[in-house]
Image (cartoon, rainbow, N blue to C red):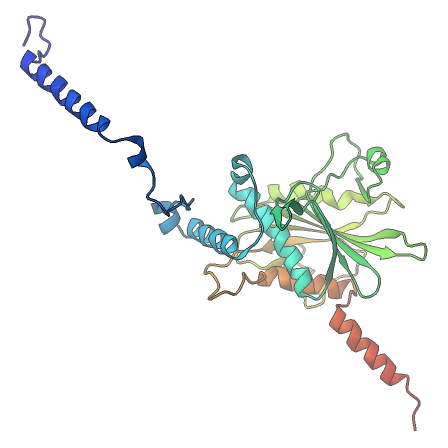
Length: 329
């Protein structure tokens, strides 16, 4: 110990430490930079980290497996740029709900007609998938109607909405625009080839295991969304989607969900909860991810509720009509 009471390191130990440092530097200098490169014929590969969280926590492992499966089977790039890839879990759940709604409608037999903002050509044979605010996918119905599925559309006050030639506006007085996660519009074609908004449904996604009254009160305002054509309130259904096993649950106990949709007339408001849980296990083999059963049931019920027949049903009805019209012998 030195007189001040502090520990004293002998000078011989300091000299030994310096010598060790010099030997390490000399050894490092013996290796040229080329020896630090990858061996010839090998390339660097970006891999998803297989840490303890992604390996042992079920929701994270499920998301990692789904992402790797999609990237392995798709010819499109999800995003270009690091900032676009860093998205919150809640944000990814919203976009997953949007994509599942599209997949469910297509599984029901509707034909995609056009899309805006979903696929962007980056090279000759390469596309980028980036679901941006305002993305819209349109489906053609056999009876001439069309179904638009819009992701995070701006619902402006009436003056601004009409100046932008939008289909809807927020009915309540106010300057701030609304932005539901998913807006489903059913448009009826007319003789002059212009489409008028007939019916609309809002799906708002919440990444929470339990829906409380605060969540419900926060989305009831969407029932006040009106048509810019005739000022009718067009959003008759508002659904809160969240990861759970509850299925399709209307908030009003007097309303039941059936294979033909809600058990109430189309002019009544029907709000509820969609318990939509991603699959717990990946599909076997090269089969793509299946359409969520709850959203497929929801899509089938909505189409039946609005009397929108799929291509197979319309063809069958047409054939039956031709048989019925035959003269009796």
